[in-house]
Image 1 (cartoon, each protein chain N blue to C red):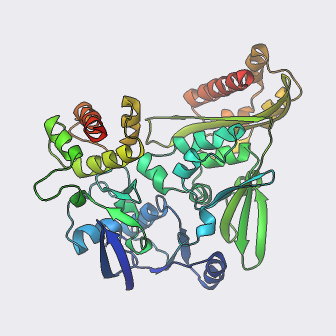
Image 2 (image 1 turned 90 degrees about the horizontal axis):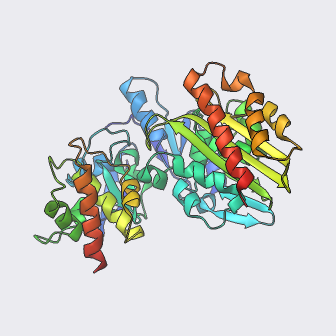
Image 3 (image 1 turned 180 degrees about the vertical axis):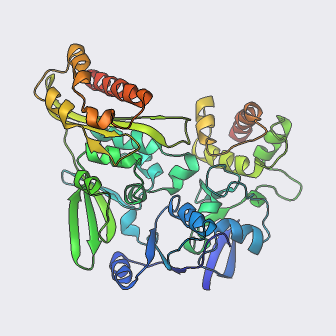
Length: 155
Length: 281
């Protein structure tokens, strides 16, 4: 077992974890932060996407023990009680949400994209979200939601 | 847990890491983790032997630097692909490095994956291998026996066998050098490359005075096509010459075991890249 301090959603957790525990397992099974989803578990679908040090990353491909000193952000950090983050609002308002399973990963990828590039072109949006698959194939609405979120956040 | 049990280590400096791995029988080095973690999952799924130790290189800050040292570009092994893409230290003549990095995986993968991991993973079709061979990279490995410098070309001829820990990748900066990397995959962007071509050349006026043409056909590690290189050396790079050069490709590389599509596309990529390099200022 390894003793480690992890900064998740601006809260420092003192944890005793196994060396072979992935960040995804830690978030969901250890900390009850089940907003981050497990899907392919191979780093290809993006359902497990979170943000580390401002950049999108795949929690199924990260060892939790390797993340001391990094700033980890999950979907749970976006809303403030009943107040949704503008990105979440845009996704709802633009009809981007169908079954919803890919949404946490999509929204975190969007947040990371807009942090780096506040006014992305359509092609830049497609590239920024290229690590997130939607089996409902709702991509056009998702991209419109990202454009709407970019407009909201730039106000 | 989705991974087999192993002991996790995170040395704080490079010397500690080198000493540590010399004491371990079965270990794997961890940088970005995009290859290793999935490999470990596959091993568990198939109920195969798993490594007893995983040694993270991520606390070793010196491995995460890009710097210019005189006429050398030095890239630390744990520099991420995203850092390479965004770096203003990489000369424009080495654009192939950025193009190769940008072609790999998806946005989150590029945020995590490292140049060292892409080179040392021993996956045959890796993109950075193609660019590194074309740009004449030197790979610096360190073990308890000392430092070993090996050209990327020799390293991949030797089936990418690492000796110790890959510390950094070093490139000679040549002011008149230009390079382009292109690849073909089934699906864009997530699929592995079916075919990669990287060409790096220098010209004196319009005459080619140095050239490296590197192919990765997905079946073998990246290798140079010496036949087309010899054909182009010392000649003016005109559109007529480029058309002629396609007939001089090394068919033992580009046609052997490749399907008709890949054989054709190899020639198409070479022609495209040479065309762009001939008109590049």
